[in-house]
Image (cartoon, rainbow, N blue to C red):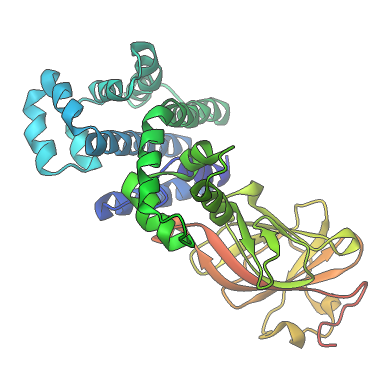
Length: 366
């Protein structure tokens, strides 16, 4: 069990959510989940995943309410006493007042049949069974099985919601001018936030589409361009010197730098919002080192003088790490900025400057 679970769960949740109380609650749950993973506390991992799953469900239902209000009023017939409270405060946490099994019936409003609803709600019974004092125990294998069930349900709900989400997506296209140069801010203001779209939903909604908006979404989520207009995949850059921004929750945490004998795989995982873990796990990397007390990459005069004995290093912002690849070539990476979704940022992202040195050259000052 590792932090890749956190990244996957986050990919099913809204890129940005407008209710600050829900954002704070999710931040708390992911912080607790991360601690539980570090401690191998299987029961607490399970409990936090269940709470994240139910928050995901409530977010889906609030979105149905926002865009299907006329039909939504008919769904209260079996829990009429809860209607007024929700309409006074239509946020995810208000839905927690409703019986958890009952709440799934709202998915009928976006054409889920009874079999599908039973499929996504049966985990409630399993949670009830596990959290009563019946002598049940979770081990790593049984936890992994249940984690797969939870993430599978989140993926299933996203896929089965596509007819409903497609209507929202099409309606949002009218917010963009035909001649408009579309930026990340435009997409956030006119597409992501109003519709509570997740990364996974946008992948489903934009794949194979050739319209300008879909192309812009794919480009901004997964691609970028340098100053000369050359396309740079956000997961790789063949340049020998560049400043790069990478969403470290994607692509198995790896960004590829350089080419041929000057090829490096840079693997990141979450540490905090001011530091990040870097590993020598990729096949192309022989060792890594932290260049302590070095302010600039050009201050490195001999890479071989740094301690290379650890599998992982955790540089702070503005610190430098050195990587040696299997061809005995060197890359210096300066961490510029770290963002962490579990610590109040809106994304998982690292910005860094890197220089890949000449073949077999250990001196970056030349």
